[in-house]
Amino acid sequence: MLNGERLIAKPYRWAMVGGGRTGNVGYKHRIGALRDNTAFELVAGAFDIDAERGKDFGTNLGVDPSRCYADYKTMFAEEAKREDGIQVVSIATPNGTHYEITKAALEAGLHVICEKPLFFEEEEGIEIKKLAEEKGKIIGVTYGFSGHQLLLQMRQMVENGDLGEIRMLDLRYTHGFNATDTESANASQKWRVDPKVAGKAFVLGDISTHTYYMSRLICPELKVKELLCDRQSFIKSRAPMEDNAYVLMHYENGAVGRMWASSVNAGCMDGHRIRIIGSKASVEFSDHQPNELLYEIQGQPPQKLIRGMSYLYDECNADERLGALHTEGLGESWANIYLKFAVAMDAKDRGDEETLKNLVYPGIDAGIEGIHWINTCVKSADEGAVWVKF
Image 1 (tube, rainbow, N blue to C red):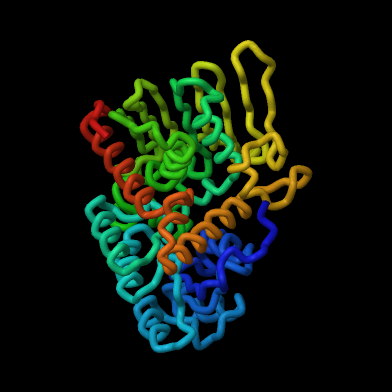
Image 2: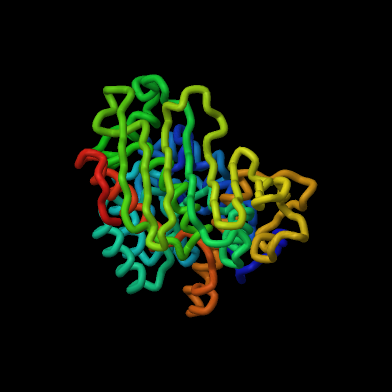
């Protein structure tokens, strides 16, 4: 169980690029990083494209005004001159900027935590992975839902054969908040449907990558062989960016899967679900009820497994924070992955490859696979919703 005691010698000096007052993701990064104040300390930032607004915001977060910078290049250069300069940077900016900022951060000798999707092209991911290895640095990708510890319970149930042979994966991440033309009046939404800034996809990149990574976390041995994607732009002004997509998958072991990703599922407030179906039993997770797992064994009454209970696997309860009587949510999930980022960075800095080998967290390989997922789905859809090799 986690109780806030330090897992590394001292907190990393941490900065942010983006994540300012007008964004909608920066606070998630901060509650994740700072939940365990033994892991990270926010000491600097280039929080906003508007320098004065960013400085005002950073100061209100408690950052020294002299370390609230106008842009990331200035921050990297100035912090490098300080004995107490930053060691880690989180990138919470639009997708099209991730590659150049990540590369600059690595060249400045910094560990990197980056929003998803990581980059536009796999070649960029491979290049950055090589650079990170040369610099001896860690890259973490903020698949923020993946820190829910019941996903680790599902992982162990699959690994231990509790479900039998895995036959089907039913994946869904939908909501209705873009059922109308929301981007016309919302700058933070507008860039998400601009291919020059967001990349080749909207909901496939913005939300389905979360669910795809979670499925890989739960079933790491299950690899997609081929997929078929059909995508739509129900708000026509978004084309070619999709606001709805269906993906069918064939896995190498003969299992099948489907993914529904949508931001036009009008009225939906509980649309993020993962169901893993085996030959003996099924297990289902919903991030709307992240403290419970539905466990259904063929021929037996349905069971509800509750977070924090002693009957869960140790690998699950290792990330427990509050105890079974007290509900956890997205803040704790982000805190869990940020804490693992810190442990990974510390292990990398110490040359502890054994810890890195056994640590489960979304790193550079997960980011590259997320790029591959998006681009393969887009290729299938743009070729007429055909099966393509993964």
